[in-house]
Amino acid sequence: MRALLAVAVLGTILLASAGSASPGAAKPRTLATAGPVLGIAADGDRAALDIGLPGHCSRVLVWEPLRRPRVVTLLHRGRCEGIRKDIHAPALAGTRAAWYWRTGGNGLETIVLTATLAHPTPVRIAAGYYGDMEASGGEFVHPPIGDGALLAFTYEQRCGLDSRQFSCPPGRKSGDVLHASVWRVGGHGPCPGMTLAGRPFRSCSRLAQADGELSVLALDAGRIAVRTASGVRLLSGTGGVLGDFPVRARAAALSGNRLALRTAQAVEIYDTDSGRLAARFPAERSLRLQDLDRAILVTALGRMVTLRRLGWGQTSTIRATGIARAQLERAGLFVASGRRVTFTPIGDVLQRLGARR
Image (cartoon, helix red, strand yellow):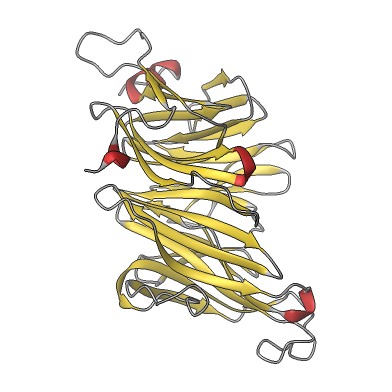
């Protein structure tokens, strides 16, 4: 590949740290970055990172701690523009990464971009434009979420009292969602909202739609958890309804037959087969739901990451040097904090919780 695929990329240094793993086993590794890690998403043994740089510049990296190991740069903005462009919430689905731009001028543009390890040049796949005033109404795309072969996002239209194209029906107010749809990357149809962002990217499929909220929250094994006007809905990879949960949730994590929902006062675990509440953990307002995998719930509070083994009660905490973000995969645990990301193999994670691999 081109120079973009260099193992040591523009100030990013890989530090292989010594661990207690047995000879031949994967060892804990650490990645030091050129700027603070603002977002992380993991899939398998890879992690996508949003690295903040001066002047609202960003860099999107994919780190493969077990593959040689190496770092791949998918987006590098060496020169900052006067207009603000922020990257939020990277997503990763296999070898494809996606991320979310919010850029402002007279209005607000929201854009989803994607690139793969084999083709690291970013491509815009969806976009929305919202007027400079709430009464203008407009279109939004929301941050993408990925897992395995599935990469999905929400596209929505909001009404404005002064808008002709997105006028508010009787009883609705400016900013209300008129229509929302869930899309996956993959297919033969045009992606939504690309009239302002250039030629349509023809590789999207619409999975579901509603005359109200339909926000993608979590993905797992080809299923999608979305927030609706009345709660959380579980969809299949083709858009079929698998179940409804009448719970108002800020965030969600999905693994096997467990659905974790962050409510206003707790983290609640639901059985996706029966729909029943299986466990509830009271939570501080600032506690963030991070992930759920192998019946291990991952949360973060400030600099502290907590692992909780569901059904057994064991917990383990990890203290980071700054605000912590974490992702748990079959390969192991990624923890990002400040200018550093650590990877701990799953064997070590399970040992911390008194479980066998």
